[in-house]
Length: 198
View (cartoon, one colour):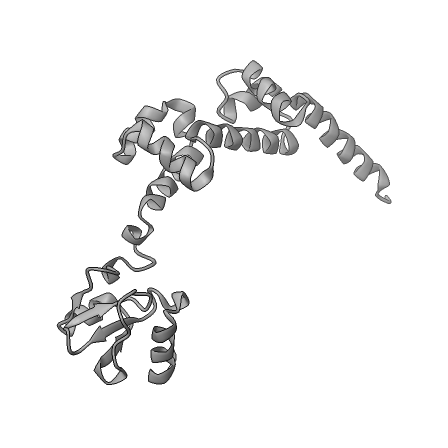
């Protein structure tokens, strides 16, 4: 950790790298802030540094209403709407949209479907369904590369509702059906095996 002068200089610069790492308490106001707070920099003699919001509060300081230090980085509230998107992504990766609808996903997250779509557009430039489709295709491609499962079984295990839908998705994305990837994978294995010395 930096010494007092180093921390005070970081405060003057409003160094975002220390946001959530140090907290600045001002003795004259009884308030503590994040180092990125837009308020005027207090005099060095009036400042005390803490390593956590809890420590500053324990010392009797109140959180600043402008920079909200109690929601500093590493706290879900600080991430705001990104937390909702991250939770949604985890559920989608676990197959939520393979079994259910966007409406049901939104309900599990405590938001409306339109709001969830807006959050995905803002943070990912894609809809929940587009993300789910991309993940299904990735799962299917891994199964095609790593197993000898029939294409119908690959479609089912990767979350597609039918083999036809999986074929359409692959053709739209790659310009060829999933079976073409199986041929490529087998040819590659054959060539690698033939090239080995016995």
